[in-house]
Length: 377
Image 1 (cartoon, rainbow, N blue to C red):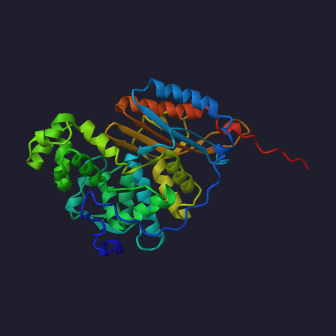
Image 2: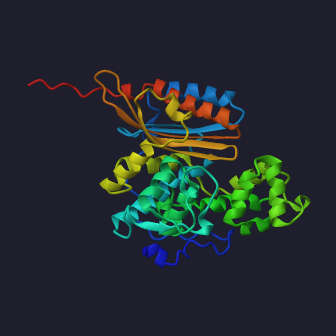
Image 3: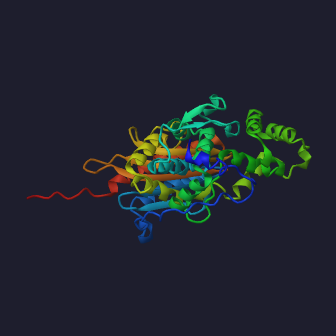
């Protein structure tokens, strides 16, 4: 039986949905990072990137946020990179790191099986919801579903397995020491619907699935009123737009793009996990099946992009490490790209993310570094 399950899994039960998120456990010191090269002035490739992405932003009905970091010299560029952005399923990377650290410690293995419970089910992509409550699923399967297919149910099972405090400890260590609050994926829904009526804090997993089946917009609002057995006229806000915007304003499951990029840089450099865990997570991120029309679609063919997408109501993100091919005599360069869109519809947001990928590729970031000089003996 899992150690975390013996901790009754109760470490995961949220006694009061809107109470403070579980306190983080003591974490090891933040990995030492190279000083931000942006403080010494913008890199040579930044000007073209800045012009192109400000044009993308101007054409969009909403806003983009972008952070780019070249990992060989830590040169950076950003647009709204120090503002708080909703990460959506971007939180699944620190969840995975927390799980893989438990494997490092010997508390879990990839073959450890976790029983699926009635209250684990969350709407969304992936294959975990095809299993019945009581099914025992291996950690390896749950990690694959969570990262590759962005499976929310798998995410919540993994959070339950390691404890929400462990996940937030990872976020505090690798993303930002202050203000990062990750919740379960089911509580994302309860908190958002709770902006309409506080009784939404008690919605069951089956209620959440029923709300998703009701469809978008006012149809979902009416279904929520039915489930809560209250008239919609009692709701505190008029629609889902208002509810989700109020939820985003709480800054739960949010971070600056620069801070999120710090975590990705640490992961790529082997500072977040041991070598086996690093290979495992980056391998999963390189096989992500979601967001095929986002950043990856704008990168050159054959570019390795180990990333994680995120999608929520009028919010889209795509963040990862791209290994950009160099020009002749120039090596390939690992580049962190963190990008989010807010206030635009899905089609326009995905187009903007694709243009961000194309702009990073066109900026010739790898070509900026001179090849090592030849030594003649």
